[in-house]
Length: 381
Image 1: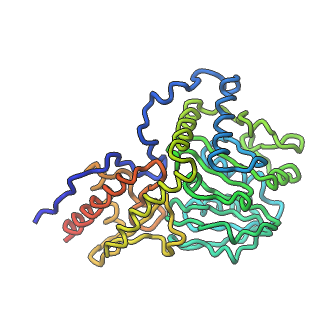
Image 2: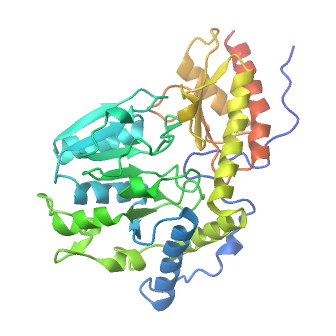
């Protein structure tokens, strides 16, 4: 008997984990106010960049004495600016439980050759923060984009820590609560939760991080795009819109449009509620089906943005090939695009449930995943 395909497809089948789907109702006409062909150092360019910084502060609730800068090379650029500029003053602790965290370990241990303790966890788990020495400089991802797990809160980070906390929050910012008093350096790219265009990163520094920058000089040379101080003082212009290198004013305009949309859905609270509802739709589906499961082992650490799932049916002969075939079938049917697990992660699907995704589309995707699963089981029989 032929397997019946669902009658309804998601209105928007885009579930990529980055670049992520645009805000609902997006059109290029929304970017008509972009100052194209103008210098980013002209008054209009500086005003747009400053507006982006201050609106970011407003929505995320970033403290007034924290600096926010727009920097080159997406979240990767922002993280590496922090690692190369701040580390080396004391021992570091590297916490990694997914691909990007492992990349920061490579930066610190193999490239900078800093004395560091490396703590790792398997995909679907996170490092036990109660075992971390926060008198060292601690580097970690808040949300494991490739492993579907997140830090549930900042309770384990002491207020009287001596080291800095450097947090890659790229798939968490705008979808999860971030405890600013526990984070000294926070980075993200707006191509994630707000669905902005790629290529730009955001770097947020606490007063403690600024103090380190002004009182510590790394032993290694710093490329120009990493330099945040001059003459022992922070280059304040970076944090009011005078970017280190030329930004795309089209991308900045796109970010501003996304930020204004975020306000329209209730700001951070509304964004968190949207992502949580999306993720719960997937979680409930997994709980109801015996052949699929959340990769996150502890519900308390399950991501609400990059929800990773695995197939658990005993009839599956080759897990990696099966998962790829399911993802390919979903794409061919126009039901779900870019759903394959990250190349270094366990075989399965990765469903982006961030705030720009509509819950109705996630709900419409679930029957299609079941259809693709059943079709592939039949195909391999």
